[in-house]
Amino acid sequence: MSDRLYEGLARYHWWRRRLARARPGERLELHKRLAAGDADGPAAGVAGLDAWLADRIGPLDGAHVLDLGCGFGATLFALAARGATGVGVTASPYQVRRANEQARALGLDDRVRFVQQRFDAPIDGHFDAAVAVESLIHATDVDAVLANVARALRPGGRFVALEDCGADVLPDDADTSLLCERWVLGRLQHAGEVREALDRHGFRIRETIDLTAQVAPRPAAVLDASERRLRRTRRWLPVGRDVVDAFLGGVALERLYARGAMRYLAWIAEVDR
Image (tube, rainbow, N blue to C red; front, side, top):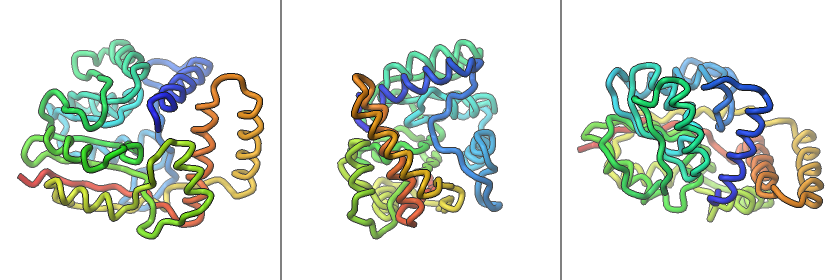
């Protein structure tokens, strides 16, 4: 997503969170919620994914963790509660401000901090592990981002990436075009490209887990009705069209999943140096 689009979506999410009277640490997640899966996948819900990520990272007590695409800090807060320290990186200055506020409210500001910068910009510090949840899809240059993560990790450092990727044969159709247009993606990367980029930048892939079965797109009729409603809203909305665009892109993404054209993959890799 463009910085403007992502910033608008962040403000919208925070506004909804305030309406729900969420307490510190609640309703901070921006990633998709997964259905229950098999033994290899996370349990359903936010807590299930947090525990699954923590298990894949390994021992957290005293570990220094980088969260690439940290949003409002939900993942990093969950890891800090298990003993980690860390830095969260986001393109949104609004998210940085709110995430640092949440850290203070939770009493975690001595363990985690949040910064605004590009994903391919050098990151201050060295890390034992890094996580990226639904972040690489928004990278203009995945190669540059993974090279940056590799530089930031200590030798043997672990990288856990959970990502929306196109199947290795991507359709060139209306849904793909709508997703790329509304999310301002140069192109939709496929799973093979991510694997190859990890190899190029010195990551040894220990495990690849396909979690696609835990993604539950809504029925086609519901998606069609949602798209019509969003397009009508966008036509008459004087401001906030960026947020509507984000949701239109989300409808296209759900359709691609329903058609088997997308994969939700987890890579667990280590810097091989």
